[in-house]
Length: 143
Image 1 (cartoon, helix red, strand yellow):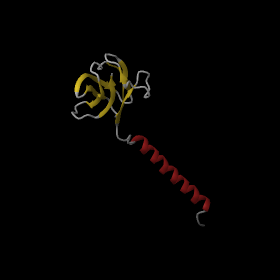
Image 2 (cartoon, one colour; image 1 turned 45 degrees about the horizontal axis):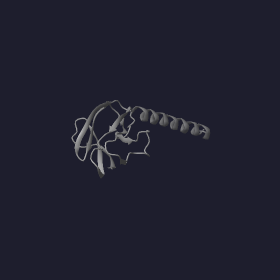
Image 3 (tube, rainbow, N blue to C red; image 1 turned 180 degrees about the vertical axis):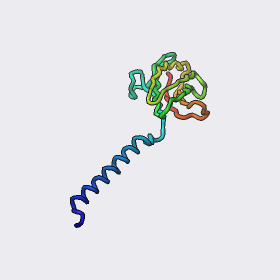
Image 4 (cartoon, rainbow, N blue to C red; image 1 turned 90 degrees about the vertical axis):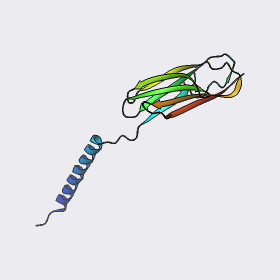
């Protein structure tokens, strides 16, 4: 009286089901979310990436939007430094919870000096770190 083929298949399917359930529980409970990061971006006045102010009139003011999104898997404190040719113009201190974002309007009024290929740098620092974490820049001409 051997074991029937039907019983062997049922036993095999039960083992597969138990292994599958244990795997799912393991993935849900001990899931590694991956390495965290922060999105740091610059948008034009219309919240797009198509119409950055490039050729500007002397003394004009232009709106930009600076965006930060926390994907670090924990709350973070950031510092944003805005510099023109390595000279600090302004600084923001921002706290963001995980998966939260902020868009900061920035009014670019550094158009007093005429010249080509001027650079406006936006530097993002994580709290407690001296090195720049992310950096975006805008090159422009003032006529």
